[in-house]
Image (cartoon, rainbow, N blue to C red):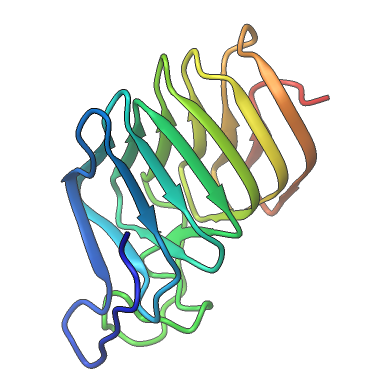
Amino acid sequence: TISGNDGSQNGINAITMIGSLTQSGDTLTLSKNPLPYLISVMDTIVSASSTLSIESGAVIKFNGVFLRILGSFSANGTLFTSAYDDSDGTDATGNGATVPTSGSQEVRLESGSSSDIADAEFRYFRKALAYTSSPISLENVVFTNNTLGISAGAAETILKAINVTFSGNTATSTITLP
């Protein structure tokens, strides 16, 4: 579990995550912190047979890279956004107020992975959620100012898609949600 971390007036005001977050059989829990989490520099991976759980109030910021899920992923009450989005009250990049745009970042749910995403928001992604042979489970999820909210093939299994909202995106979804 990562929790209770704080900082200010640094070059990077965030908890930086790079490379493999978990090994097989591990569970990593990201709790709410005064600092956001930052996925930057290179893709970050949740290994197969492991779990990443993100608790309510956590903020995950991206700087043009992917979060690749090969294992289990759960997020409840989480904001996923650009490193340049300061609207949550944090300035992860330390560059003052900025106006973010959709970057090249994605959350990729790879073949064999599973996810349960609830009460979450995705802002300023190229593809907010990209599914590849991974079941879809979304409840009360908002997609705002992304190039594409959901990318998935027509054959993807939708376990749950309740109260999914799209606002200000270039495109909403490559599949029809029930």
